[in-house]
Image (cartoon, helix red, strand yellow):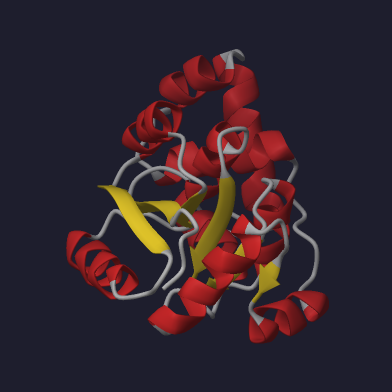
Length: 203
């Protein structure tokens, strides 16, 4: 039996049942210890800073917030493995930009996730082959960072006033960012724009 310290993993998936199943399966893997299970962005940041895990496994597409934005916030504390839907290869580019070292589909088997955790903990990278190939043919996002942030907030139900506050801009600028995003995505409203951007992995 190995005498090496186990890889300490922070599991950050907001769907509770999925999180529990993954934690149970990973606990069966030799050399891996799930030290915390959390669901939301602020909880993830707090736990990463307090526990200093070796690897954080983060849901790129939580129902609330932005998993990749959270990855950026905790990147200095640990290595990151991002889970994403296979239908959204655009997240691969954003995940790499956010500092993730591992990237695989949410439906990947536990042994593959364990392999990714071991690889990034050792300083390497682990990329889902299907997602990596798909991302090579995906067009670049037409949205600027500001437009994407405004659209993400709008998709979460934020008003123009709230978007302006969050982005530290005037309401006129905030409205212009949302409108610009809609034009670029050929959308008739911000709901359609959000749907298109998420489908392409741009949001």
